[in-house]
Amino acid sequence: MKAGDDTYAGGPGPVRHDVEAVNARRRQALYQPRVKIFPKRTWGTFRKLKWWIMAVTLGIYWITPWIRWDRGPNAPDQAVLVDFANRRFYFFFIEIWPQEFFYVAGLLIMAGLGLFLVTSVAGRAWCGYACPQTVWTDLYIWVERLIEGDRNARMRLDKAPWRVEKIAKRSAVYMAWLVIAICTGGAWVFYFADAPTLFVDLFTGQAAPVAYITVGILTATTFTFAGFMREQVCTYMCPWPRIQGAMLDEDSLLVTYNAWRGEPRSRGQKRTAAEGVEAGDCIDCNACVVVCPMGIDIRDGNQLECITCALCIDACNDIMGKVGRPQGLISYTTLRDYNTHASEAKTSGRAEATARQRTVGVSHVVRPRTLIYAGLWSLIGIIMLFALATRDRLDINVLRDRNPLFVTLSDGSIRNGYTLKILNMLPQRRAFTVSLEGLPAATLWLAGDSEETPTRSIDVEVEPDRLKEIKVFVRQAPEAVEPGAVDVSFLVSGSDGETVSEATEFFAPGQ
Ligand code: SF4
Ligand code: SF4
Figure 1 (cartoon, helix red, strand yellow):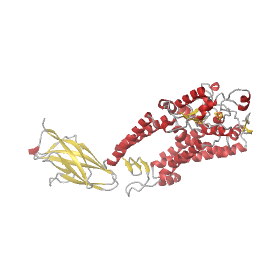
Figure 2 (spheres, protein in one colour):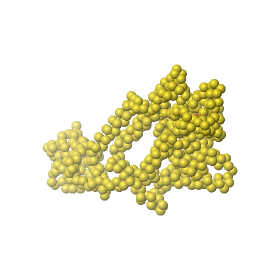
Figure 3 (cartoon, helix red, strand yellow):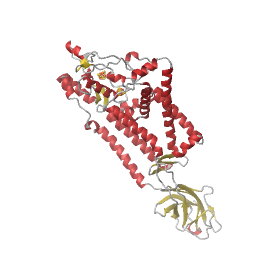
Figure 4 (cartoon, protein in one colour):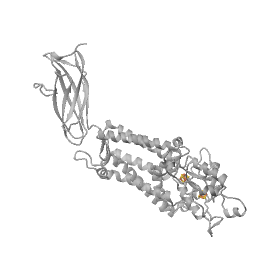
């Protein structure tokens, strides 16, 4: 790092950093060792946005399992809970049963469409701002910077021999990382059991082994991925950089170095001006490279490694302010705008094109492709909301006896047996009436009950949030018996008016 070769507004020029992008072409070998990255701290709009998003996402992750939601005495009071033991998923007022898993599938489709929408508008904004790998790596770098100092101090410490200062600082960093990693793994298991109970159980050794194993695995992966592997996870392990290319078009906003404005770059603009050479706005200070968490140089063009975190925009805007040039040498720009500005720079001159440089506007966001994604996203959301609002809270499943298919009784009547599974999906005990639809002369009774009083319906009570299995027999009088299979349905009616029915068959000898 050294002071700039030029002066601006009477003061020394911005500091120039000696750094090279980790993927610089001349260094590229098939199996090259990792080049350690020590991102420098930066300030600016996008850095602030990233802090806010980090605070919100981490807050949601850590706080959510502790939110309580009263569902009455027969259901858990945790707002968000994946209850594997009882095969339920609770999300505030919504309770999803296994047979309603299509709601989860719908949510996943919406998440996918949302990702497509964000990518087609602003490239890998998900990667740069909200992906867990980015958020936790950012947090780990913040801790590292707090204890070891900014880029240069960290680089010095990294090269220093293992003496007291290095051992003390590195131990403090690793301890802090470990605490964060344990909290990360710990928070995850709270989504799968009552959080306050599991918290105590984890510390008293009473939690299930799977809880300890899960915390252990997530602690190890968080510590390794965010502490040591960092940008390598994004570049080599994540498939998203490869997929995203298909979702970008020439109207997608990407972090772009406006080469039409910055080139030819020069480290001494006043000197080059004095020599009659027209230099671009880039003073080749490398500030954009040293803040990049991926260690790349955005001036080499759009790259697979770029997660569009926009920290290079903040760094360069800061430099442009110092050298008295307009901001936006690196900016969120579409390919179409870039080409327009580049041709304007050729025809009307660089200064004119810079003055007309377009900022992000509504038209970048609202276009046919994004409208289609947003429309599909909204449609699925509306369908799911409608289905949720109108879904049954009662279900029935009928299994007919197959061995024997029927029994001929002493008076010549025919009896068929059925197993009925009645599902009460509300957190209250409910009374139901089970009746027959079809076979007007038939009667039914509960297995174990007497059939002395012929009846067409029986009463059943089902515990809250439970499935009740009952065995019933249906008897057809001899004079009404039809040979072969006859359609019949079981109708279950709740005292609250909810009804469901399921069709089956009644078998008699013949045909
Ligand atoms: S693009 Fe901006 S930050 Fe990067 S080297 Fe040029 S002037 Fe410096
Ligand atoms: S090049 Fe810029 S936007 Fe891309 S990862 Fe580096 S700092 Fe972030």
